Amino acid sequence: MNGASTSQTRSLPRLGGAVAAFLVSAAFLVWFGQSRPAEATSTGTAISNAGVPVAISPQALNALQSAEAKSGLRLGPPTRLAVRNGRALYRINGVNGRCFAAGKSEAANAPSFGVLLCSQSDTAARQQLVDLSIYDLTRGGEGIRIHRLEGVAADGVASVGILGDAGAIIARVPVTRNIYSSPTLGDVAATGVVALNSHGGVLERLSYQR
Image (cartoon, rainbow, N blue to C red; front, side):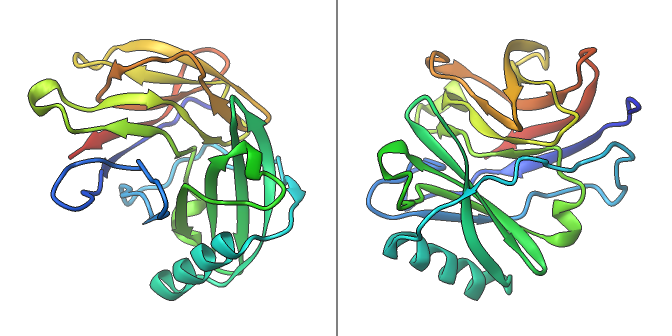
């Protein structure tokens, strides 16, 4: 594996009149794609963790049908990748793309998605990170704050770094079987995250944008 890297900017969606991305209560949030540069990375982006099959709940079925209708994806049944820190993470493969989701772990055997992120095949083929983290954007000038860092990483990603205001890595979370999850992150101001290989090299940089 070489040190090639890509960068991307993710514009966080606004819910209602307030800015609050990926904070979902009774409803689920479906977010499509991640803005990418035209060039592809030469670093492998396979995700070996295929997960285990789970029964699909009415809420999850509704979420997947909505994703298909809005994106044109043709999706299969979900699999559970892991349960970490009170959260279950899922993978949903499709003919022309894929989705990843996260939700409360007590619903792990009948998925209830709090966050659902979908990508077309051309975008999915270049993703090192599928970031399902929970943010708070409501604090005026204090910027974006991460409450819970979690998501799915490609096979070559050893850890995920959190970028501070100056662009330096201020914290790292290890990746185990393609999953990163932090139960003790607290409330951290961040400008983005980076995918890091086992030598600390940057594979991909994801910058947060309002």
